[in-house]
Length: 301
Length: 280
Image 1 (cartoon, one colour):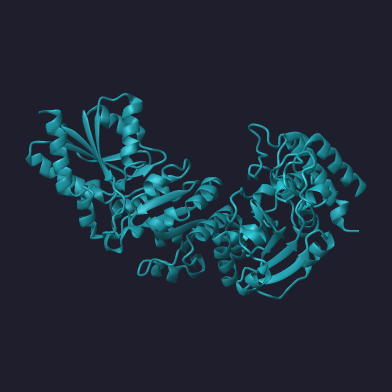
Image 2 (tube, chains in turn purple, red):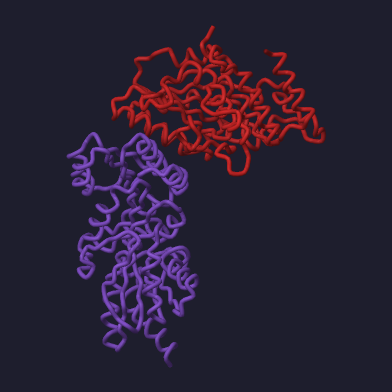
């Protein structure tokens, strides 16, 4: 952010009163371009809309659930309807705020914001891809939503920090199965793929890092070459990655069976670490392996 | 004589266009449009400065977007849209819908969802300050719109940041979509509420152009944002609308709410038009 702001005087940073130990460098370096909007996410998006209309490039920051869900309608009627370059950053994708509980989970932000035509949705899988994605999208004329992971140690070296709008990244090749994933779960999926290789199943692992435009051509090419695909995401089943992949399969008439791994059950009052939540929702490495083995055995008895 | 009137921005000229277009399109929201005629006449005739192409021109946000037809009437009288364009109001494929769209010349912000406009106006006012521009922001909201929590989020921000280039006008007509504001969520003490949020508050007759102009031209050294609570009458200018009487539908109870929804019959239109002619 500081690098971008040093190059672009239009950049303004707004926070919804969050970002302890994250915001301070920007605040120190650009005190005139930093505003704490308070715990008021709707107003924060409204402010950003007014600032963007006047020629600024505002970034808003909060926890994904608060950044995306509370002000959803302000995002729709503001930056999207006015086609203004507001950048909305949602931190703590999926179950990253594990012990904080379900109010803090980012398990619908991508699915919900994907419905807004005109809003580019970016889901980096690791810090290097986050940097690449922010640089690649900073000059887009329309609005962007970033669903970010907060763990700097969760790196995916196979990705090499690659990011391209409308494209997917293949981080592992394999002929038996396509595995399509996004966000910090990409690492879990890749580990599962290595374990599946021990069972003699070679998976092609693809990372989706942006929607609107959806990577339709890349996914259609991938799915045309596989009879089975498993999607792995820490998002609600409806509207997220599985919905995108399923639509491509159906609309292209592809002979590919979809096994979607996603969040399917309502909150039950429990909380736990991210790993615990992945396990609970069948998204951790062991669950992915087990789902694939079941699926493959059913297909090739 | 005010230059407002020299420019042809007579409140009743605005009202005539509102009635003509509402009748042609056979739509409602007439009461909400009629009651802001003086507010818009004052703002666009006297208060708002700068030519349409000037980046430092004052900006207006019609947060009570359902009064867009009144704004279209003003834009027509100012020559920013043509008769042909105005006659597309409510037509399929037109930019002139029931709520304002920024695609229309003279409209900077699309609105329609109550509680949205003030936060945009606050952001635009902040932008003006950061750009060291003298432009001001005017935002028209309704008293019922103050039901929305987001209005108060924006009010807190604007006061904290001393956005004295931001002026809010509350169309206090006492009416909302399903009843009287005092019966729905009573906020009769709007003055105290805004004052306690750190705003400079004026109260003004919302049907006096000169009083409205005065409220916005009386300069203040105050660093607080400014809100003018403009007392208005729903359906102002057409007696049976002010009284809440639907002449053609005698079975409906008498209530101001009727003219939030009803389109006019031929008879109602003739009577309303005649009243405006007599009031010239």
